[in-house]
Length: 233
Image 1 (cartoon, rainbow, N blue to C red):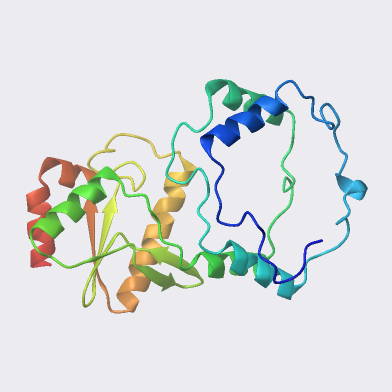
Image 2 (image 1 turned 135 degrees about the vertical axis):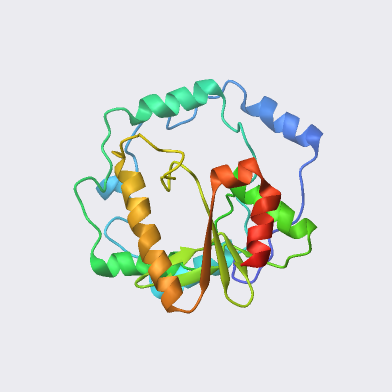
């Protein structure tokens, strides 16, 4: 029987390749007892049905999982094409559990608070070019610094002490007037991006930050000229 404080005999021990092969061979051809059976522990059949973890238990689970790296972290092409197709077909016809529901204002605030310290790891190609040219020329900067903009949190692309903010704008998503000349703006996502940009510009200026927006085409045409603009700003 397991006792609290006892260390399992196999803790920190790894099975040899030979041993693993023996285990695989011994299980070959065996049919799992639950194959073809569904819903054995779903709904009311689940022993935890209707119960909730206490705050202390949640804290214990959080501490136990801290530092654990997901098995697929940093890996690509983890699933085969056949597996991906099975996963896709399995979702057909199923509706989201959240369909038709709306987050309450309290839930929205909790999501904002939880995400305020999460930094983006994605950098667009124009961002990478600017970051690279700044680093080569010895300019110290911070990537994706978080600012509070009204009730939301926003991560600026580049921040240079003491008060310079640089935003690298994609020509489509931020609707560059010179690149999109003669085109009609219909995409609601782009319209919302533009509205958000105006709010960010106003709030940052109110907080005494100097804001410089650099367009994607400017970087692609002449990144050194963009560096000159930043140094003169």
